[in-house]
Length: 172
Image 1 (spheres, rainbow, N blue to C red):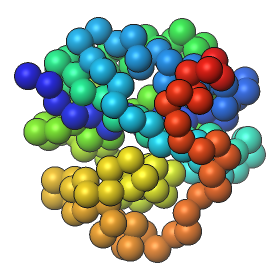
Image 2 (image 1 turned 135 degrees about the horizontal axis):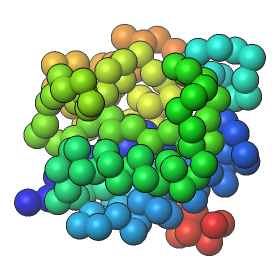
Image 3 (image 1 turned 90 degrees about the vertical axis):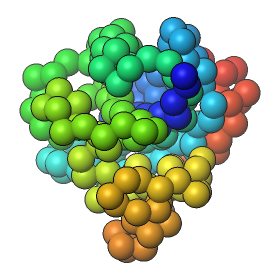
Image 4 (image 1 turned 30 degrees about the horizontal axis):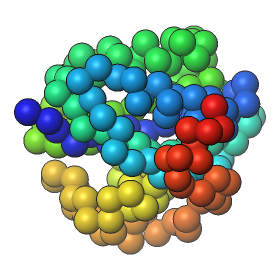
């Protein structure tokens, strides 16, 4: 059975726009999965230490038959293919970060994978792209995306590349 899954993408090193677009291409090749839509690319200030470049962020929606943990393993493999290292500390600079934000029908407090993603409701760089591709989405125990944006009370991040799957396919 297919589940809708929303994946956050982010990069602030080694040509971040190219990193995110390349990761979107990689999502198209995930086994037992189909890329449904992607948001525009947004530029945002870093969440943690401010002595690093701005981020490029996006959200992708896929339908998958993969379990959450198998999907996570596949996403980590894509990160490694993009030279992701995990030695930069929490919120440090990175070539690519892929996070499962919401996996339809799944909630988890497992230390390996918490669903929905912890802190999702505090991140404009996730909420605005989610609103763009799934305005009616409701996150269990949190509310609708529109409600979460109202509660956050932050302006929309700068869009640096408008959404179109065809356009993104030709860029990489």
